[in-house]
Image: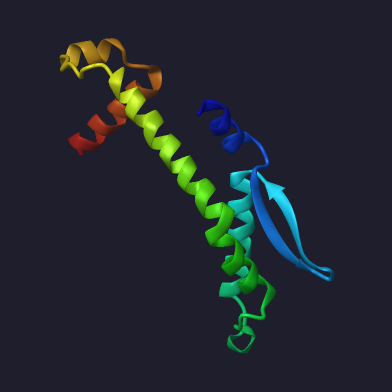
Length: 125
């Protein structure tokens, strides 16, 4: 549960495979780093010439091979944890209570005041 969630978000747990002179090699990344690796290859693919657009292209092969393996499953796990976290936070959410304009003005910061005065000045014109 929580240990896997922390590992998923903070540790190098996503395996990506790259083509090398000796075949394929694996390296581990955080989920964010893995997604950035995939995004970088996708960006490269979008800028290649049509004659180079083949399955033999290293970037195309990299994306095709890695996207639906570890990256996909770890992204789905991360999404599930995010939804669970959002649901648990909703339990503790306070009810919205309407307040008066005077009450809002009592909590106004100097930045809010400047913005409000500028908006009022604009309305008068």
